[in-house]
Image (cartoon, rainbow, N blue to C red; front, side):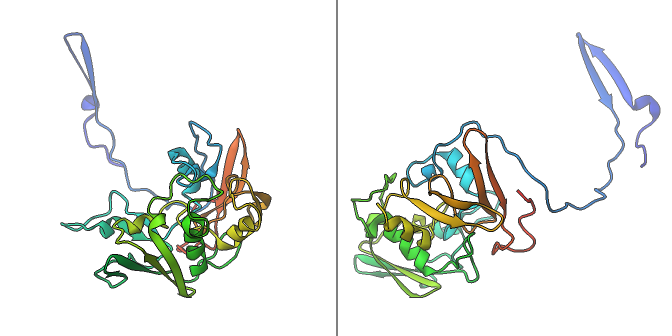
Length: 277
């Protein structure tokens, strides 16, 4: 390592008007000698514990609840990160990135069709995705999500939802194959990209079926789950979660900690995620 200034200049003390200014010449740092390694554990402190995981955009809009579930739960799209570039004249679709969908449906690519005062939106879904409990993700999950929010119960939903605004503009959902879902709107709904996207954007159909076989309230009805290297047991979906994201739910000890572990089968691949938990 080469020193870049003489010894006498390494520390210069200048005293003026009662102020002492220290100026030091430090050796030039070299490049890192090691590459980042996979593995390890990251512990994050939360300023407030949420009493329900569903408080992230289902029964409420608590941002700290979203911090718990974001690494595990995914939607059709996710919002583009602030540092990602945008076109000079961005459209609404430019603010979104495909997640469980393979592309953002728009009028330009033909996945949005307007028929008079109605519209159809076609979602093309990612292949090879599995829920954390090993069940394959498909268009059935997208349809079940729209059923949960509106189509099954309309305005009589047993689950205390934060709002059904937008969902109530959906007339029906078709699933012509496992990787295509067509959402039929009864109006030209401009905010169609917000439905089924973001945290808790898509819910697992096989677990919703367990809830619908009971009272239909996902804050009340227990489901049975088995996640390899993660959680196994029965509880309500406001206390446990099964997603498709890079981390899987393991346990939540109220008042102490919530643990997520690495999903080795995450569709994002590339050796990610790097952390073990």
